Image (cartoon, rainbow, N blue to C red; front, side, top):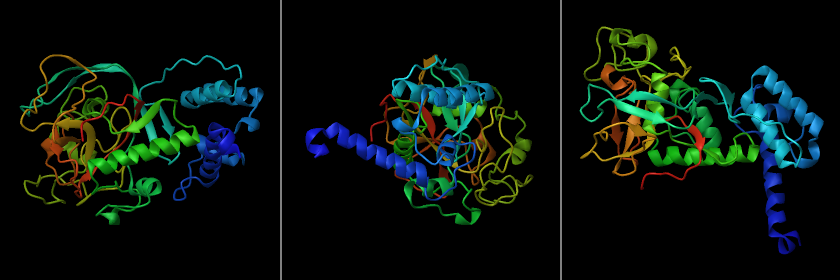
Length: 355
């Protein structure tokens, strides 16, 4: 009856029922962290439906979040008040570099403020250093997506190195599968109400990835130029790995991929940006014309070419391939034991490379 009279109401009813299931059940795989907004809602016993919220309750939650410095939660509470037709406080969209929030799968996202940096690497002819400006801030996952989180969202684990455990990076998946994960995560988080309206998860552009990797540094690695220190900060091809061209003088202690966060973070809190597994980026790359365009750029993203950009190096990659500005690429359908990813949360633009 409802569907025949008002299809919109019927769709809204179905969405509420779906939300209620997700809020009460979580992912079905991982316990939600206590700091998660979703965990707070679940602890209250009811999902945030219109009849469950009042102006005083939401305002108190907003003020508590503001006082504690949880600006993401404060903005969410303000949006809820607006959605319910209640008077909402004005909230400036400002967060500090490195500010974090936990999404509904327990994955920590760190904020990267808009800014200008020098992108590229003098060691590669097609990565000539040049000025890049990112005009909008974005969140990026603190770690590579873990096998546990990937299985919670997708339902399967394609990884080859499962011995590293649920906190090992998911790998052996294509660019298409990484993008599909981002789309599925976007749907889940929108249902939970834990991301800003119009924002979406997707693979980071290589400019966003390098900006976060450098974290304000201009050196070969985010910890400096000393390649002999790399084994202390990342998992790459060294004595333990023993792959071709291995560094025989140093040992990071891992033969294959390591659990995320095994090594120290960079200045903005990101881990495993140097080594562990290569990370898919959004950009396409034409291997016949791979060089960066000349001159300063704003919000660059490669939209043509049969390959997709890889960043960060990996456990089987030499120290040079783990440099902050080093570029590589693979066919988007490739699956390998050293290929993983980390998602970004960005304003939706619809900009995608051609498949």
